[in-house]
Length: 499
Image 1 (cartoon, rainbow, N blue to C red):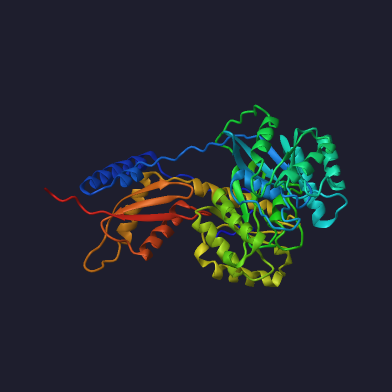
Image 2 (cartoon, rainbow, N blue to C red):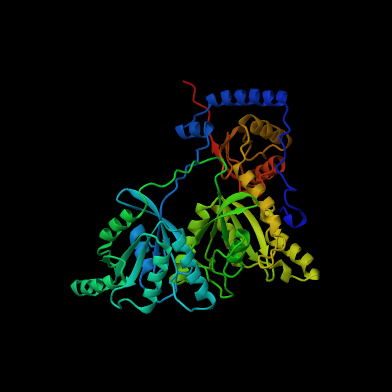
């Protein structure tokens, strides 16, 4: 396991290519000979695709942002779920469930946009509620247009009127949604909201979908007709997910990396319930950070908000390119920690292990803790490790070298000629054991894809799991691949029958 606690920024790089031109020529000759030898074997269309795989280009586009604003418990997240057509936003029948601003991709009438869910805004609040209100105000500044949600059954409250003042000050297009309207009586109650001075109130029922079409038509008209085009370049922001069990300091680390308070931080475990995408620049590099809700012990044992938060955390891992797995260094490694690591590995994402709160570990205890971690994570010797304190910022400057190393490994591609030369040398030194009088041979190898590196080996017989692990270990020793899982699949092929 690579330990970046002993290294400064920029001190680790991937090994420089050591091949000379003659060696490359020999590799190409060997590749051509081995590939020609495959003609004697039965190959499927899928096999041929794997042999000729090419990386796919990444494409992104800039979209207008529509923010959902309102006081607590007026149905903002329910409306978000109705608009996006999925139950992604956390919904419970009590106020204050949503705490951060959360982006969701959405579409209406053929137009794509980003939907920004926010926590309920309140005046004269303290503690975590103050942080939630500040996040909602930041969302107003970020949005291109706003849907202001009011509970029609209650009518305009003093808090609603305070929100109206905020919206007027922001000078953004606003569409007024009168929520919880289920019939003619509700429409009469919604009409009273004309008094807010924001124009026509659109009566809707976010729960049942009533009137949401007219509301979205008005919202699309409020969004800018044209957005500035953003050219997708090779240096586009990488997606980084911060994952771990609750209260290990994920939000605190996000704020430290961002250089400002972007998300709500509180001593209360489970403060974050939605993944929060944040565009930040770290050491001059652009990143999209996804701060995720803490993963509980078992998804089927969780309830309500925690249940949906756990599901969305898995989604955040799958959407990311690299995951920073945060663990609390001041307490022993738990089953929840190892479960999070397994989720990241199974998703095939680059990974850095981050031991937060290292400043709480005594000098005499650190050596014993390192030994314990090495034992518990013996299968993860390939994962870079950083010990830091998100609270004080201690050693956070050592995070980026580990991240860059892991991403470089995740992107790394080995030429087919070099790979087969490597396999030839490996088999010559350590051939597969003979089983039942037969010894399987590796006929050809190719790297089918990157992100994560996936290798396909064509063999004349079954390769045992222990031998596959041996190949993986030698791949890492030769080519690095630190910080990324490696996937190796074996395709057993028989020779063509002579006619």
